[in-house]
Image 1 (cartoon, rainbow, N blue to C red):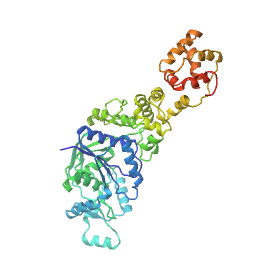
Image 2: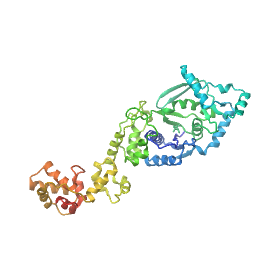
Image 3: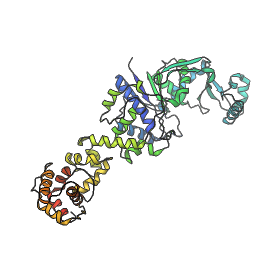
Image 4: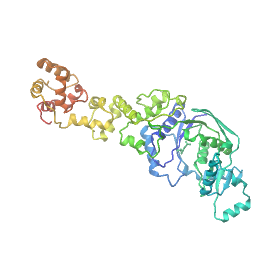
Length: 447
Ligand code: GLU
C-alpha cells in the first residue's frame, strides 16, 4: 500500500503559519515514505470561498517548495457527494431534521443549564410521516443528520496514542444543509476514501470530527485511514493563532517580513518536535530528519523573533545563486557573488542588502573626522587591481607609518569609507568600493 496524504485547506482566507505547518508535515511525511501528496481545496462553503484565496494557497505552497502530486477541488465533486448521500438516506443512516437554528439553540441552552452535555436529542427520529408532511407544508426544509452508532470509537493516533470516544457522547452530525449542500464532515470522508488517502494528518481541533468521521468511513465502505492530530501552534502567550491574524500569513511573512522559504520550513518542520531547530538550506534535509514520532503532544509556541533569527542564520549560509533573483527583484541585478558574500553576514533580511549596495556602489557622505590621519592613509592606498588581501596589505602599511592600531586605526577608516560605525568586514567591502571612491571618501568628499 503506498502512502497517500492530503493537505485540505478551505480557500476562505490566507494561509497562516499554523496551516502551512500542517501542509509541510504532510508533505514531509509523503516524501519520507515515498508516497504522494494531494492538495485538496475544501471549497464547498461557497459564500466564503474565494478564487484569490485558492490562488494564494497555491502560491504559498509553491514558494515553500511544497509541490503536490495530485490536486482536487471539492466543488467539482458535488455529484459524487449527492450519490453517497442518497445511499446513506436509503440505508437510514442519514435522517431528515426540521429544527430551526433558534430551536436548536434553545435545546442546547436547556441541556447546558441542567449540567448535561449539549448532545442532539434525536427528536427528528421520532417524527412520523404525517409530522414530516405537516412540517414541510409549513415551508420547512430538512437538513440531514448522520445517525451515529452508540458504540465505542477507537483509534491509535500517531501523535496522541490510543484515543477513545463513546458514540453516545457525540451529537449526530449534520452532513447535508437545508439547501441540499453537503458539509465538510461528509465531503472530506468521501474524498479521503475515493482518493485512497492512507494517513490523515491534521490539527487537534479535528479530534472529535475524527470519531464521527470514522463511523462515516465505515458507513460509506471506505478504508479508515491512520490519523495523526498535531497540537495547534499558539503565540508566545499561549493564544491560538487565528486565521485572521494577517501578520502571520505566509504572504505577509514573505512580502512584508522578508522571510526566506527555508527559514519558515526549517522552523515549522521542527517546532513542537524533539529535534533542535537549526537552519537547513533544502527540504531534502528536512525530509531526511523527519519522523512523525518526534512530534510532541505539548503545545508549540510560534515566536516571530525566532523566525527572524533563523532567517538571518539561513542568509549567512545561502549561496549567491539562491538569492540572485531576489536581489534582482530588489533592483540589485548587478550584484554578484563577491557582493553577496561580503554583505550576507550582516543581513537579517535580503532587502537589507540594498543598504550595503548603496555603500559600495552609490555616493556616501563619509564621516571623515580625522583628516590628517585619513590623508596619510589615502597616500598609502595600493594601486588596483584590488582583492581580498588589499585591506590587510594597506592597513598594515598605515599601521607601520602612523603607529596606530586596533580601534584607533580601523574605526576612522570604516567611518570614512562607509559613513557608518558598523558593517560587513572591510576586507570584503574595500574591493567593491574601489580605489576612486575610497580615495575621495578618505578626503572627506561624498563619492
Ligand atoms: N478544510 C478542513 C480545515 O481546513 C480540513 C481538515 C482536514 O484536514 O480534514 O480545517
